[in-house]
Figure 1: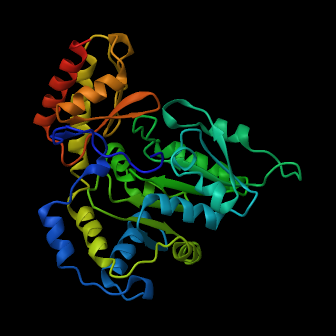
Figure 2 (figure 1 turned 90 degrees about the horizontal axis):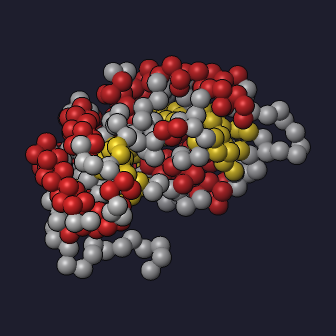
Length: 355
């Protein structure tokens, strides 16, 4: 099997501390209750009141005219680029951006667009990097159409783009006649960490989406926001991509619940990530990137133990980690408590001690 996901290793115990990803969160009993009680209709026909409530709330939260509910964040990214760009055009993004590394080449396969990768530490490029990438129109080069950022930057360690930098980048893009798109998979983590309201954070961006299945803890769903005209065109691609749903209010209710109850508590995840990073940094031979939010990246090359062995040993003790970009990654979320952080540190310490 190459493309299908792997099942848990044979004989592995149940996961007690799941640091693999915030996508691993389970809906809380109160969220499930809200979902069960949701008023529903046919979303594809425009009859689902709970979906409408979510989209209206998200448009207001992001300071945009309209919004559309999607099953996944990847579909939000794909639909957005397909609205913004035409075949043969170009998107400017960081070389580690999700649209380039983790969406199966969808933007090339479905939109025939290419992505111009910019370098930069912590998953970010600078305004000057963007200026240097802009080129005049020519029949020899693709038309540059879209500038994209990822907030927070996943491979950058959950790093938070400063609002001032986002504003400057958006201004440069618009000045050059390009549109702007913000991948907001963990946008609320960034807003909580920076103390900036979502509408202010994304004020210069033509389209933006928020994922509810990560730190916000819903089982399904993302919402793409933009102008009324943009969202109208996004609906065409939602339909083409198979994203138009029926009684989607069941899922939208979980997203609404998360906006009411799971945003402010993201600060707890950030505190737990800091505690985990401090504990890892005290282990000889371990190098840790100080986290901005809920992602902790670390390397163990200095210990003489292979990262894959650490991950495997931890999993067999009920602690699940992941690897990304050659580094180990631990992600905190609402299902990870402070005592679990201490348990995970003990398991990792023992995994390293075995040599």
